[in-house]
Image 1 (tube, rainbow, N blue to C red):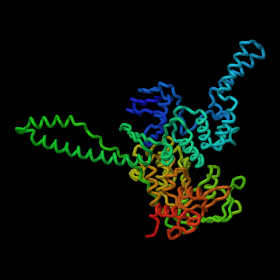
Image 2: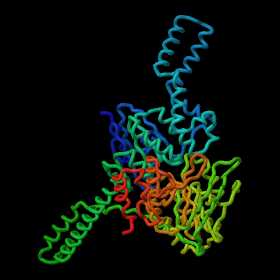
Image 3: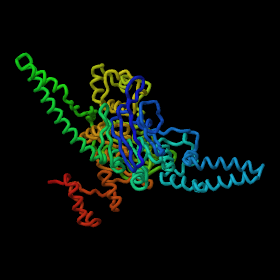
Length: 570
């Protein structure tokens, strides 16, 4: 049976061991999620498996010579290529045959010998066997699936990061490797593309893949096995999807903790007995018991990773109405979308959705009053203070140290105070004078939150706050934002995060902003059942809206009531 066997005995950089004792096998039709903390070298592992890194102590068994393809989370290629040229590169054999045909055609201008004509005929037949005349149709088809067909003539350097990610995905799908390795494929793509990719991998992709992603919903829907790496412990295997893995891991860790404590207690008792009888007539027994203790295979304690602790503070002044929009056009050089009548109230947590990212920054900058509205009535609460978190960490000066970034935000602390703050976000003393450009993406994210914690805001605007964060850190952030009474506007394609946090959704669709109550799950339900977006499943008293009974079967209404029973007034 076809398989890919991976065994990494040791990989080190500058005498530091990066990966050790990693061993697993990919079998036919495996769909695997690899999960770990941000401090583990996940990208390094994928580069080793796909031979981008070769200098290590290893065994990679690929006896069937299966094709492997690695899709990096940050896509870099020749940026002077057009999107069309980049996608055409996926047709390796067709490109080779096109060049051969071109060379033979030049020869035919000079010589029409039987040998040249036969060579041309054979090459043309091979070209046809590869469907050489259909590659333009395939490029346009896949580009249409991912909504990048309008970019085919654009250069890679002229398009955004999220568009480059979609180009890379399109190229991979056309390459159709035997085994696909995806490193954070959902970063930098919009919700529509994410759901399309999810559906494609579930229903149309016929081969194997291994995915590294922090999008828990995406992993649940695309992977049926979960491999966990928690250095320095060996790899753990779970034959289940991510959400089931979380439950199973807790059970395993609880059992391991119990066994560890039981063994520790037993060893402590035996050591006490050995010490008691060591100097008496039973010294032989004590010595024998001591050897027995030495031979016992020690149980490793369960690995409990450190978790960041997010703490936020709220400004004293507040108002029931935070923002008011009335008959406004959001615009840049021309009108982009219209807001008829909209109010953001205190304590609401709003998820902003659109079909792509085109107008995201414009809308945020309009709220921050960096861009004027067109034909507008817009008001802010008098004492409103706005905090902004950017996924590109624009608020952080990469040339400054962590300490200097705090000072740049008018936050001056002693070393002891600064260390106390930073330890909540898993930094240590040695990081204080580290330049920000030396920090990883997840460290920059946590530094950004550490600075936000020291300020007081009534409204927090979050742009992809869970990008770069590992699973434990995302859950810590979710918990902190759920408990805190900030008014929040956030943009995210992490549906797990959205379903936990959102109280309302602002949807930008058909050049207009509309409102849907509740979270993403509710929004999709209403969309599928043709229910008005501005209709809440619950009225102000948290009771089932009777209008739903006119649109849904009574049985379905009862199911909804049971599902959301915790919101009903008892």
